[in-house]
Image (cartoon, rainbow, N blue to C red; front, side):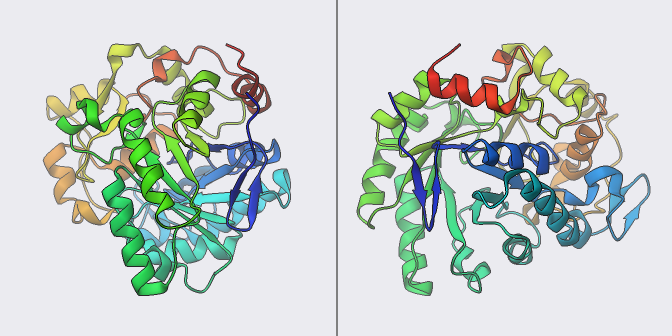
Amino acid sequence: MAFKALKIGKHTIDTPIIQGGMGVGVSWDQLAGTVSSEGALGVISSVGTGVYHNREFTEKVVGDGRPYEAENFYSGKVLHIIFENARKICGDKPLACNVLYASSDYNRIVKDACEAGADMIITGAGLPLTMPEAAKDYPDVALIPIVSTAKALKILCRRWKKTHNRLPDAVVVEGPLSGGHQGFKYDECFLPENQLEKILPPVVEEAKNWGDIPVIAAGGIWDHDDIVRMMDLGAAGVQMGTRFIGTVECDAHENFKKVILDAKEEDIELLKSPVGYPARGVKTHLQEMIAEHTAPKIACISNCVTPCHRGEEAKVVGYCIADRLSDAYDGKVESGLFFTGANGYRLNEIITVKELLQKLINGEA
């Protein structure tokens, strides 16, 4: 099966594969720039830019290098640097930025990304009803919300149309096998009716009610056959995160990659998160320390996500997500938090982005 190019807004992506935005520091300049250079869509994560390159570009860090407050954890200055470096790799090919709706400084981060040169903004971790307001000064930037149900898409389209006379340029529908934060509560993630194959067709039908909105399938997609299956169900493209961790160009620390490569199927679980929804990652020594109440001290320095209420939810679940994701970026296996999709245990090699895309397109193992 030959894959058709994916048109989103004013941009055309030759290979309809979107590399999922992964923070902290899993998809930054090297990975996203390379993915876009190879004809797919690279996505820079806006999360935790303040820890980029050992914090050398960050305005203010405290203690053991933790960015101080949201303006430093989500550093606009560093985001610009990351985009500049990615552009050196991919030139003027389409390049996107993932901005979590739960981010404490969402509107400002979206503006930073647009100013840095993002062609598209992808937003999940909450239903982004105010996304058009954040990007109102940048009409040429494509807006791509992430939803988990057709109902959510309907609500979002109604709101966007009413408040800004705008509709999504594309929509990602994400099933509960994805890495990181889920769009369902813990028990809901296991229900048959919430699996990607079930929620994708209704979203495709709802999208048709609002015009020609491309639908991108995400969550648990692994190989060529999975992509074809999603296309047969009506998807115009797919988003994949975990497989890109297993690439030479992935910005993650080598220890991060090793944790995923060494993980067995039973090691990958839905974990409690200060964001309020479960997140999928590798169960490591961190979870043991949390259970034993010996995990690193919680002190809200970075104020990273609104639902955490300045560390109150972190105390409930036993860890600070900003600190633990930053530790993973630094390669600290003992205290790091390592997100991966449900199929992460299937990673068994590190290959180049070019090789990976060839496998996905041609149907190689």
